[in-house]
Length: 154
Image 1 (cartoon, helix red, strand yellow):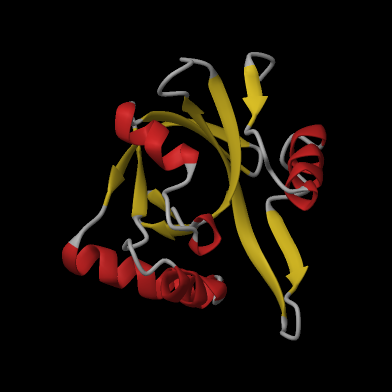
Image 2 (spheres, rainbow, N blue to C red; image 1 turned 90 degrees about the vertical axis):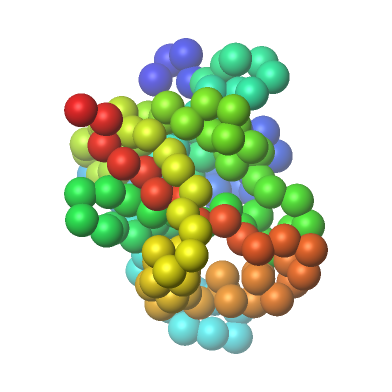
C-alpha cells in the first residue's frame, strides 16, 4: 500500500489504530476495543477502506467500523454526526470502486448507498455494534447518515 495516503485530519487514536493494523498485516487491529466515555467497553470489527480522491485522484485510506451482510460488508458515513458527509463517502459517490482490507484479507469491492428497508435494517444492526451512531444521527439534523454496502467485485 505504498501508493496510499492516510486520510487527512484523522484523530491520533485512529492513526495509531491504522499503524497497528498495517504493521501487523491485519492480525492486530481488526477487532478494535474501546471504552466509551461514561460507558461500556466495546469490541468492534474494523476494516481499512481505500478510496480514490474525487479531486486529486490519489488513494486514501480510512479506518471504519463495519458489519457483515451475506458476502458483503457495510459501513456508516457518520463523521461523528457532522453536518457534512465524510470525505470517503464523497469519494465513493464519484468513484464506487474501492479496496478493502478486513483482517489479513484484501479485496476489491464496489460501494453503493443503501436505501429504504435495506438501510433501516442495516442501520439497526450498526447501532447494535456501535451505539454512538444513534447519537450521531441526532446531531446530524440536516442529513440522514448514509449506510454504504461494499459488495465484492467478481
